[in-house]
Image: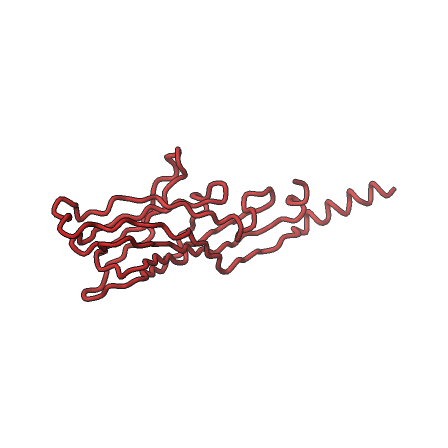
Length: 186
């Protein structure tokens, strides 16, 4: 009789839709400082003002639950913000374009521009902060990692002449619905 009761109880719980909405308001991950070489003064004559695209992987696994488990649905990972910080003022940066790109070796989904930055005239910030538009990044999340591509335009004559460092901080959120019965059967 007890096994039958368990089956009836499981069916009743499934029919009730034992679910919960999970909301992680903000998770920020930082890549460590990267050392950049200085440019010899006067050597900038042949340097382009186009900053080549740089792909930056961000591992968000430590701050987010496993969103690809069975029973997890309606998943959203909104892009909240990105901070780029330099050990020196960055007057050489005129514009930046931040795109999310598929994982290495993949062509889907297509790259998507998240935000563009235009440095205000007369400023030389050490931190560039861009707010996100809450674009859902879930299709770009691969093995708990997101890859951003940063490109732009700069003024080569204003590149630092000494070694400098830069780091980046990406902030995302997470929302999902978890069906406890399905998740428990993993």
